[in-house]
Length: 530
Image 1 (tube, one colour):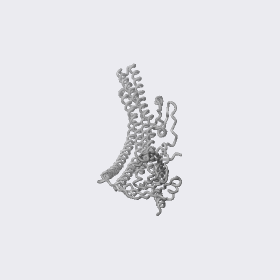
Image 2 (cartoon, rainbow, N blue to C red):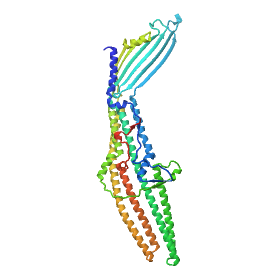
Image 3 (spheres, rainbow, N blue to C red):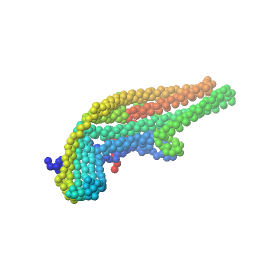
Image 4 (cartoon, one colour):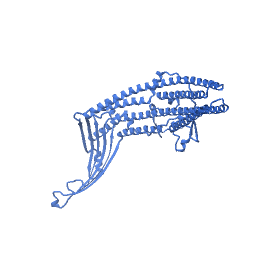
C-alpha cells in the first residue's frame, strides 16, 4: 500500500468510527435550548386588584400555578440538569487548536574560533489541528504544521527551507474504555437525572395544589368558626339583656346577670381568637398564592366563595393503590435511580479490564526552499511517516477498580431496596388516606346528628326558661353546646374535603381533577424554543 493511500485509509477509519457512534448520534448533535412550560389550569388566573380577592378553589389553584414561588424555584432544576447534560455531550465536540512560534539564536561553534563567525539560526513554525473524541472511545487528531528554517551554514542545501507536515493520529482503546455503552454512560446518566428533575417538578406542582386546597379549606373553616362564635356572642348578649329586664321586674336573682356577663366576656375572647385564626389562615393562603408583592398587599382580604361541601364517595382501595403506583413521580424517580445505578455498575465492570490502546498515525512531509514546492511535495506523499503500536497499562492489584465495582454493586442494591421501601410507604399512605376519608364521612354524619340534637335541646331549654323551669345557666350551656356542635360539623366537612385532597395528592390525581396542563416527561418534558 502506498503511503498516501494509508493516510486516506486512516481518514476513512476515523469516519467509520463516527458512523459506529450511531446510537449516540444525539450526543454529538447540536443541543437545542430547552424550556419547561409552567403548569396551567383550564381558566386563566384571576387578576389581583383592589382590597378584596374573591376566589373559588379552582381559581386559587390557577393563581398558585401562575405565581407560586415553590413552582418557580423547582422549575429551574430541569433547566440546570439540561445544562449538565449538555456538558456531558460536549465531551464529544471537536476542538480546534493552533500554535505560532518564532525562534532566533546566535551560538558559537567549534569553528567559531578560527572563522570568527557564529551559527545564526532563525525558525518560525505554525500549526493548526482538529481533535475529536468518538463514542467508541477513539481519540482522533488531524494536524498541519508549517516550519520555516534559516541557518548560515554551508551544510544546508536549502536556506531558507520550508517544511510542511500533515499528520493523522488515532488512539483506540481495545479493552478498558472501549465501546459505545461505557462512553455513553455519563450522557445517559445525565439524561436520566434530567428526567428525574422533571418528575420532581411534577411532584412539586402536585404538592402545591394540595397545599392550596388545604389552606383554602382551613380558611373556610376559620371564617365559619368565626361566624359561629359571633353568633354565640350575640346569643349571650341577648340573654344578658333579657336577664337584666327580669332582674329589674324581680323574676330573676341578680346572680343571673353576673353569670351572663361572665359568659359574654368569655365568648368575646373566643371571637378574638377566631379572628386571629382567620387572619393567620388568610396569610398562609396568600403566601402560597404569592399575591403579597409588597407590605401593603398583605392587607388584601381573600374571600373564599366555595362553601364546604359533602358528597359521599365509594372508594376502591385496590384500584386507588394501583393508580398511585402508576402515577407517583417519586416512584418514577426511584425507578430511574435504579437504571442509573445499573449504568454505573456496567461501567465499573468494564473498568476492571486492563488499558490496551491501539495507536496509529500517518504523516506526509515536504521540504523545499520554496513554500509552494514544499506543499506540493507533501501532497504527493514524497516524504512520509508511518507509526503503529500498542500501549498497555494495568495497575497491580487493581484495587481502585475493584473498590469502585463493589461500591456500584452496593449502590444498586441500595437503590433497589429504597424502591421497595417507597412502594411499601405509598401503599401504607394510600390505606391511611382512604381510612381517613371513610372516617371523616362517618364524622360528618355523626356531627350532623349531634348538631340537630343540640338545636332541639336549646329550643327546649328556651321554652322551659320562659316558664321558669330552667335557668340562664342552662341556656348558656346549651348555647355553648350548639356552637361547638356547629363547629364540629363544619370541621368534619372541611376535614372530609381535606382528606379527599390528601388522597388526590397520594395518587397524583389532582392534576386530572383540576385539569392542569403539565408537560409529560415520557412524551418529552421539554420543548425547544425557536
